[in-house]
Picture 1 (cartoon, rainbow, N blue to C red):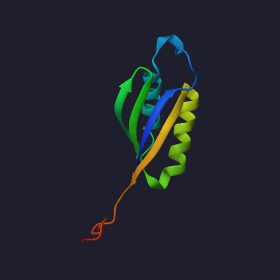
Picture 2: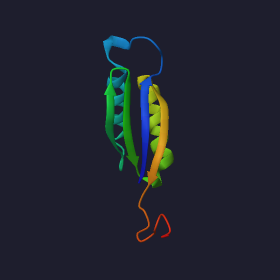
Picture 3: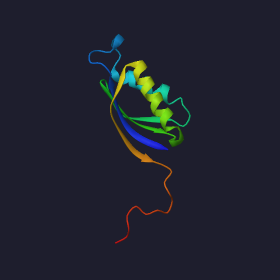
Picture 4: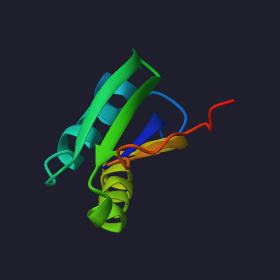
Length: 101
């Protein structure tokens, strides 16, 4: 599984249509995106102009997951203002990250 931290905002400046916040549209993107198999999200910061969330998806569907996210963002007028890949799992069991001193 891949886990990444994403920050979502409105794609264009100014008020959102019908008074909905950028966060509302970002949530709609993530709900639709997470309907794909092996995808999930966890909102970490929810402000009217910004949504920060961790997203997790299956590594074997990496390209499709990223493409679907871009597609939903485009459809709903949401921009990814930053993204940071945090981890790829499963980790190898028994592998030490640091050598003992």
